[in-house]
Amino acid sequence: MLDGVLLCSGGFDSVVYGAILAKAGLRLAAVYCSHRPNVGNVTKKELRAAALFSEKVLGRRLLILKPHARGKEPAWWCEFGDVAFTSKMPVPKAQKHLRNRRFMAALREHSLDKGVVAIGLLGTNERTPKNRLADEEHDLLKKTIRGELLTPEATFGFKPKLDTKAALLRCIGKKDEALRKVIWASTSCRLYFKKHCGVCWGCRERVGAFMDAWGEDRTNYRRGSAADLIKRSR
Image (cartoon, rainbow, N blue to C red):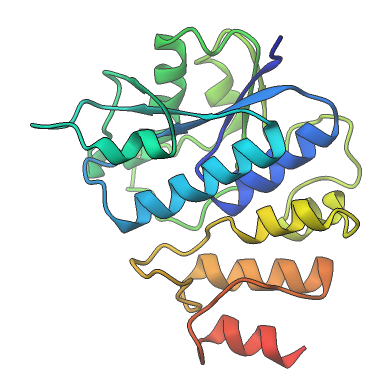
């Protein structure tokens, strides 16, 4: 019997937050929502990380919600998880600020929003168009589901407040080496490289969090990048 679902992009926030909830005893299914109309290298990197987390930490196969492809459906999606189709996506670039609300609508479409809905949101550095409300606010997202919305910054009995990436990592601790390897396999980079680029804001935040919380970072950044230099200097 599941307690609910975790929206899992394969990124740092969703993987670490999902691990914290699993350690707290919640039984969750990981759901990857494909909001992009394209299915490039970034999507595959995210899926690989999300599938690994779902199998190793939650003990179940990843569920993928995606729009129907134009033309023949690529077979490789099924390599990462079980695929279900949604009419709520993809999300046009001009409506990127609605992305999380679309994810909630996709969950509702498949009756996956009746229990706990966990989403690893720690705010965003992405620019939101003027006069458009970004959908990162807990209260705003809560209105779109039937169940209980959980985010790191929402109260869930954790102290100290989980409002930074380093705080999330400290909550995990250093004892579980297998879990730490899964977390290091998460993604943060926003650029189209096989390795983490080491220069985008996602990589810089990532290396700082790992070094502050655990004193080491085993992420494979591009050699000589800012994050790589920080990693090697400590």
